[in-house]
Length: 222
Image 1: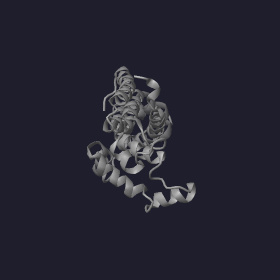
Image 2: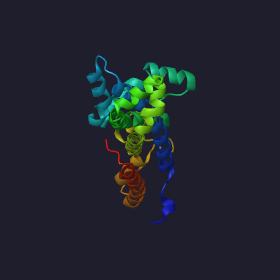
Image 3: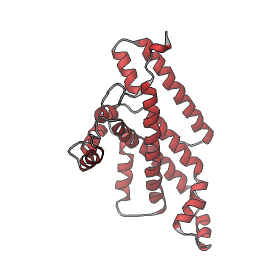
Image 4: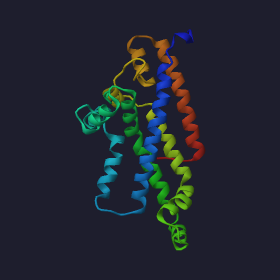
């Protein structure tokens, strides 16, 4: 098959969406994971259930919640449109939002386990030496939990890279704008272009294999 007949724009978009969504999921996920690992608060079980919900919710349900959260009639959607001048839905930024939500639980679960594995005595020693909570996190907790956090980030990136259902609902399938690799593969199969679908599948599989190798190297599991 002539490789030039394959549109690689979805790959570039997928990499962009994956990069941004992984960054967002990491920042939010590490913060939430650390809060749950070091403190006990009322409603903690509810927070844990909500953060894990994207792992079990059907993609269409997740996409529907996102439509309610970032649609044109939502506060976020109205604020975004007033600032940017265009709706958030059916944009590549909406694809980032969908992938971020889907990837978020992987960072939370893995980072939380890593933070909880840090010896309390080390944190107590740092506290006695005058370290603030922020210094304990930056100098003790995060370095010791680094491998687990990195593994969670890699898993989140893999999840974001393959996001399909929620992305389709909030970002659509617009060629050159919101069509990611997963959507392009689906379109190719639906159109009977199995040669194109095979090429895209092989490319995405190669990236996934690299991710799995990284996960194995860092020894992190969700």
